[in-house]
Length: 209
Image (cartoon, rainbow, N blue to C red; front, side, top):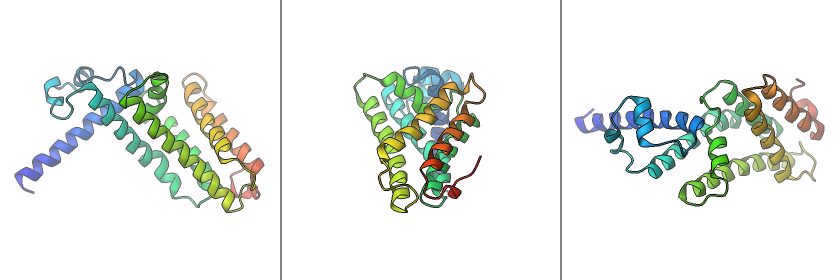
């Protein structure tokens, strides 16, 4: 590896480490609480060193959104997409999401949940980007429902948008209650499982418990 390549690799590792910390911090304090100064304090580095990567708080916030999106794709979406298309993939995505929360990957539970709550009613490039990422997630849920309908695993009259909302709502509720109510994650799993089994043309495609 040449000197230039080595510096680039170290720079990319540093950027990844900083963004890991940024996403973790924002999951607790929100994007409003994410600043170069606070991030520097958490990492015990100089604030000036972070300016080499991001020149403003807004740039850092946008970078954190992309990093969190990639983390979600890798930890939640990726494992589910390895499952067979249809109901099994849809339920696997819900389980993967609950596992992400259960494993405390982020100290605040979910980067996007707190970012979405604090961005309600706001305008600007950061809320706009959050809206795009949220739409991607909802579109994915709707697509998996539609695939299950096309495979004949769900009734033809299933409304994809509505069922996707129900599955997503169970995940949001599980996250909100998980810090205080021990059974909330399991309840969210059982609620979606019961809903999907009740709709399924072949309930045996899904677990019984």
